[in-house]
Image (cartoon, rainbow, N blue to C red; front, side, top):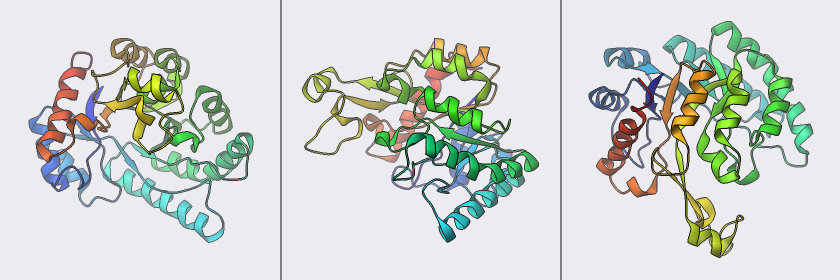
Length: 280
């Protein structure tokens, strides 16, 4: 397993990809998740001894219709071909449910629309993954019940989960048991933690703050690995036991380490040091 991170956008870090890659090398990272269609991604990564783990593309296969669906499908296909050419291992897709359809209908719709894309993924040798991010209940593949339905409907060996334990713990789902159960279909893994704010839970309950928007609803927040409730030794042991040997990529959404470029990079640095106890 290699420790990586999602290359941050300009809101947090004012560095081009080559500079980010050089920083990653100096800090002991082994991989990065690169924005789709980044020029010369393979060369820059190779120059710095890095693996290109995953890329993401906003191709809406569930909600789009007509020409918009054709455009989304075409963009996803182009992203797969770009990833294959640049040596990127996986493509992450969105999965926001189509309005007016129940969950079962969305499962069938997703499987049907993924089918031609998976043929391309198998042809070019790139995995297609979906992260278990709830998006406030708007996304499809949120919990094991739906994971099973979608994975059964899309049996391609190139399709699977991008496992992120931070979402599971605040949903009350055992992140270790879920990883063990679905280990054979985990194609990528995020490293993000969740801290519970007990005063907020007492005040707002599990539905979160009602009078103002706030990530986590005021009773939990995302953290750098090691600062929250995820059981990292057990979670990573489950990944190892499942045979996962890919990238463990830090998804930095920790507000404690926001505010400046150096502060943000400090968060990534601390996260890598923590995870390096278990990954080598």
